[in-house]
Image 1 (cartoon, one colour):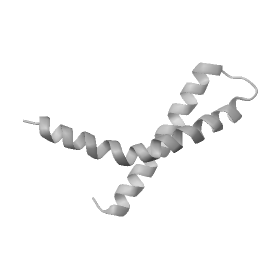
Image 2: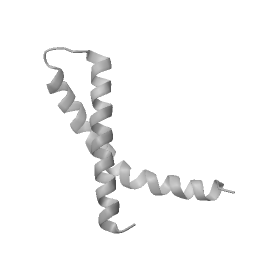
Image 3: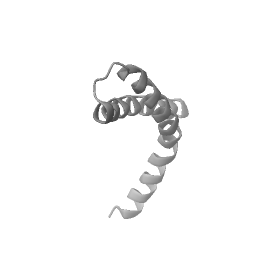
Amino acid sequence: MSKKRRIFTAVSMALCMSICMSFVMVSVNIGWVPHFFQAWLKGWSVGFCVSLPLSFIVPPTIQKIANKLAL
């Protein structure tokens, strides 16, 4: 996979996953309150900052482990 494609894939996955996960977690934890979208954006910004570097680190590590375990 080319470097540009890997970067695009990692950023896209981090963006999509952080949006979905933060939405669900804020919905579950505080429900539909008047400040829901403000809380969601705060949760999303933190989640994206965590998920972006992880989206570059975790997949290659898992791939190496899977290659070692594959028969």
